[in-house]
Length: 212
Ligand SMILES: O=C(O)c1ccccc1NCC(=O)[C@H](O)[C@H](O)COP(=O)(O)O
Image 1 (tube, rainbow, N blue to C red):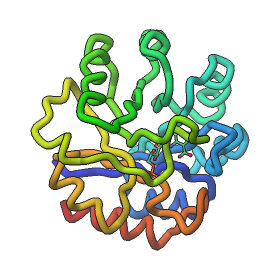
Image 2: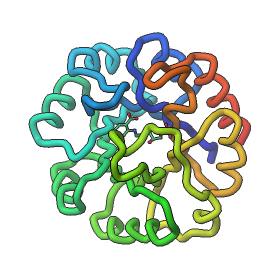
Image 3: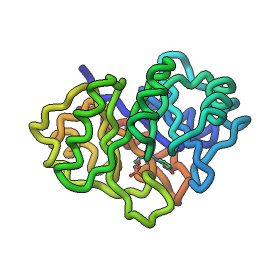
């Protein structure tokens, strides 16, 4: 099975097209106003319309309320919700309503990984292992931070998962080799400035992933 990639935090047609043409399996849209990658509903509607059926659209949220999820899903057809800082009970509730849910686990130390076992009971569609950002950080992700990937080597995952946090075109191959990830996620590692995606970096990242 080939390794595939999600390009996250897309907000312009040209960078979205670069991700799709470069072979991304997933594209992510951030719905969190404090983020430099935040997209509004109408912007997301227009972007989503460009995404072909074989590429999965992922909505990235921080403890979203029903109104936001309903607005996003109605406008974009997004069915996959990547959920940061969202309580277990809320994740279970959204799963019960038929959404594809991807809870993010913030990882700093090895014991953080064990939170994944709890989600096996729901079960969720995929766990996202992302680097923990500082407690006072504005964002729970998208900051180019990474955790010690060796912690994932040999780890018994309870289900499908994705590696996120601090990946870029240069380090993604060793990261895949070290962790065994089959899906990798990148945001700031393919940007020229916070929130500004770079088509050459997107292409380089996807080319590196395709070699794995
Ligand atoms: O990217 C954001 O701005 C963001 C905002 C709020 C919640 C999550 C966010 N990003 C989550 C992602 O999926 C990122 O791709 C992931 O954290 C990796 O980011 P990076 O380390 O910059 O590649």
